[in-house]
Amino acid sequence: MSKGTPSMGKRQKSTHLRCRRCGRHSYHKSKGVCASCGYGATSKMRKYSWNKRTHRSKN
Image (cartoon, rainbow, N blue to C red; front, side, top):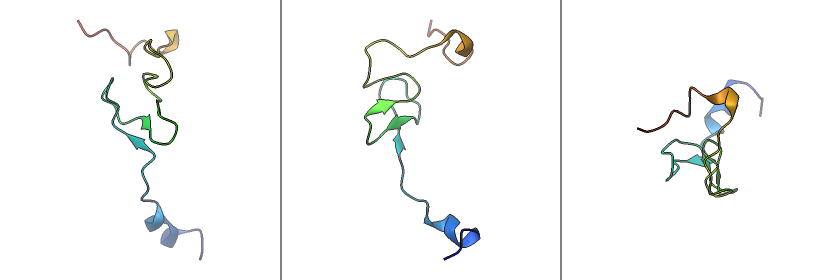
């Protein structure tokens, strides 16, 4: 089997699910950790100073 177009139809397994804390589609199924908010790894919200626009406060 070649690595070109015929292989593209074989990627159907989902690694990320919708996160129950932030609602984004970034909760890793096997790791059990959200890549966006850090749910599963920490009780605090995952945020960085260079990432201000994506994590705005929900007021």
